[in-house]
Length: 383
View 1 (cartoon, rainbow, N blue to C red):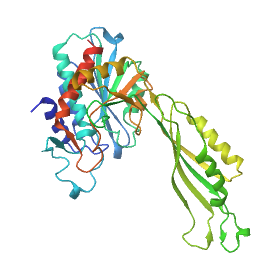
View 2 (cartoon, helix red, strand yellow; view 1 turned 120 degrees about the horizontal axis):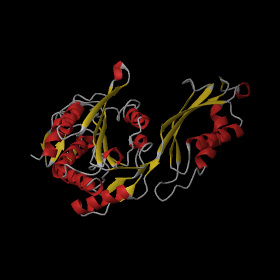
View 3 (cartoon, one colour; view 1 turned 45 degrees about the vertical axis):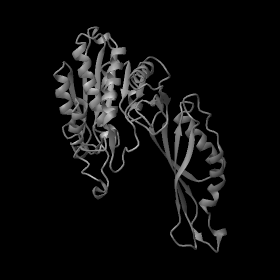
View 4 (cartoon, helix red, strand yellow; view 1 turned 180 degrees about the vertical axis):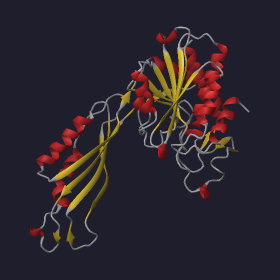
């Protein structure tokens, strides 16, 4: 059994449902500490939702002023869902047809194992490497993400640590290992709009004010707005309604208020403040009596093609024989926090077809090539 597979199995066997870590980070720290890493544990969050974070760094011969490559990931996993729907226990690593089954196998304990073993091999071959290497691991990526990577990044920024490159081990590959690198993500901005009316009897509409009817023209306008045109990396910003509710349940009552939940997935061509202002302008122009509460789920980030994506792409081609594609599709990730203190952030990991699903698994044949890609990238940037 390869070292990467063995470590993946050890991590999968730990029931680290968010925000639990269940000793995963301690295991990683013991291995990295043995090869000269300084390991710092950072706990955060309330007592009933305690989050574990690990910052491990090995400074190269150029010292703190040298370039720093960071690998980032999370040891927490999503809940399993109905256990009776799993073919095998989600926390007992199980092999079938060349696949390793278990919760977190692809999202993202396989990536973490590949990172750790890649670092071990690189340091063994180049103990006097020039640049520095770090690992940032959290147990709050699948949860609210309030006490995980964002807290570590705030601490690193406060003490002046500079990050040059970061690879987040999210499962980005689509059809084959290496076909996709995420070099950015769209931002997420949600709103809960409450449109106020006057409740009344359906038969006497002149004595009531129907908020559904009043909002309808504004809704049509918001659906039709071109928020931006995107750019070479991002599609145009989209605005989508996720829920609409009004009424008492009775068919003869005009509702007194309408509640609409919506979300922007926005590109770097727009800003949260700009999108908010445009929505308010539409609502005001239509004369609505309303309240609008906003939630910023994540800022967009973008790393144009450059040193990091180039080194990673060359490593993929050398290991897998593929020309990779840069993509910004999908939801948010912890890359949005790291990008606030690191100029080049990309995501790369195994295929993502089964993430968050029952019978999540990773192709065993992908694990060592993934490790080799991470090691080749280290060789290109840190040597």
